[in-house]
Length: 219
Image 1 (cartoon, one colour):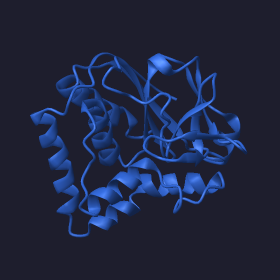
Image 2 (image 1 turned 120 degrees about the horizontal axis):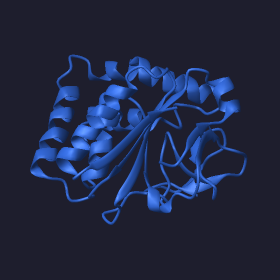
Image 3 (image 1 turned 90 degrees about the horizontal axis):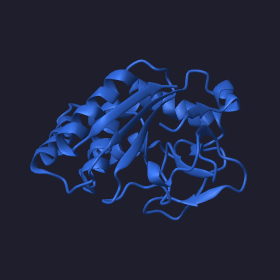
């Protein structure tokens, strides 16, 4: 596993921040019938709540918003990826269907209410630091225009930023040819629940993406 660390200056502003890191060998195949049932069940669970929007006030989402504010980023304009997914489901748009690995990350992100970075380790260079974006830093987000990274909580390897709690970059995105992945849960509210969330991800990857050789750690 590439070494993942938290920048001290980010930790000073967000003292409870913790990362759950999971690597696995996978097959990013098309979404199976079994995984489709998991996606639909997750969608129904949210849509059948008496007040679906109440999930947007969960402790994990509120902690993410507070973390963004502490770093000087407006959480109403730059949402954590979990909140963005949940809002999509509440609006009746459902999950995007990409491929097995991305679909699994989306399920576990919504279930945990935590942003999850997902990276093809073949395109990650050296160790990874979780830090705030610097002035002038940008990258092309997946399916997005260039993202203004200043102040955004992001992951950077030896080349530079490649992912964030809002949107990952095209450089390290997982594609059908990906064989080895790193998923990173971002919790601004502490490490409680990270082990169980990684366990849920392991189970889904093993069942629906031929996941093997799992390694996990909490930073």
